[in-house]
Length: 174
Length: 129
Image (cartoon, rainbow over the protein chains, first blue to last red):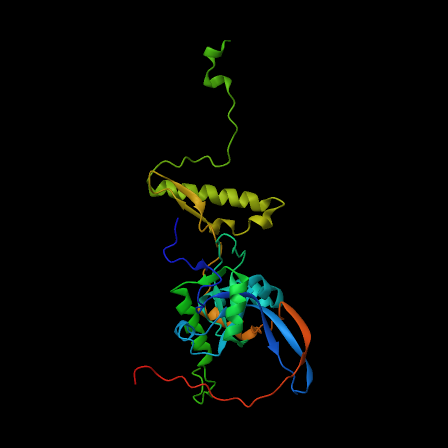
C-alpha cells in the first residue's frame, strides 16, 4: 500500500541541495588550536543530513552549510543502555529528548536502511557550500527527507537551539 | 466392514481440555469460558513450566458475546500496558541519555598553510526593503 506521506525520495547527485538531504561519509575538518606553516588536521567522516534552510541554499545566501551527523538507532543502543530500553526509544519517538530527532526507516531501492535513524543536534558542523555541492554531485544519487518530516526535523532543531536554562525559583508543590 | 459403513462409533475422538463450546451469546456461557480458562491456566501453572504461564491469562481477550466468538491475544505488538509520560521522564532523569558518538572514520592529514587572511563579513541584502 502506498504511504500517504512518504518519508523519503531519491534524487540525482546534480540536483540542488535542500534541507533534509543525506550526504554519506562527509568529511569534517577539525583544525588544530595553533596554526603554523605546516599543521596536522583531524578529519572526521560522518553520514550527515543538511540542516540549513532550503531557501538559503537555493538563493546561495550561504558560504557554509550546516550539517548534523546521523546514526542508526542500533548504534545508540550499543552506546547507551537507556536507548536499549523501551522507555528510551519511546522518549526518542515522542520527541522528549531535545538533542535528538528520530527518523523513519527507508525502504527505497538502493537506499534501504535496516534501522531507524537518529539525528544528533549536539554535533552541528558547517562545511563550505562549494565543497558540499561538489561532494554531493560526485557521490551521485542521494536520499532526501520529504515534507512534512523535513519541517518536523527543522522545528526540532529550532526547539533544541532555543532552549534557555533558567533557574526555577518557585519551590516545588509538595 | 466396508469403507461406506464407517460410522462415528468407529472413530476415536482425542479429549480436549476445554470442554465448553463457544457458540452462544449468553453471559452464562461467557463465564463458563472464563472458568474453563482459569482451569486451563491453573493446570498449566501446576506443571513444571508453571512460571512460564504466569499471568498469561491477562494477555488474552475472550469474547463469546457474539456469534463469532473471539479468543486471541490482547495486542499483537505489546503485551504490556502503554508507558506513561511520567514513567518515561523518570527514566530520563535517572539515565544519562546524552550519547557521545565517535565518527565513522577518523584520520589526520598534514596541511601546508599557504596564507592566512582576516575574515570579512558576507553581507546578504534583503530583497524587498
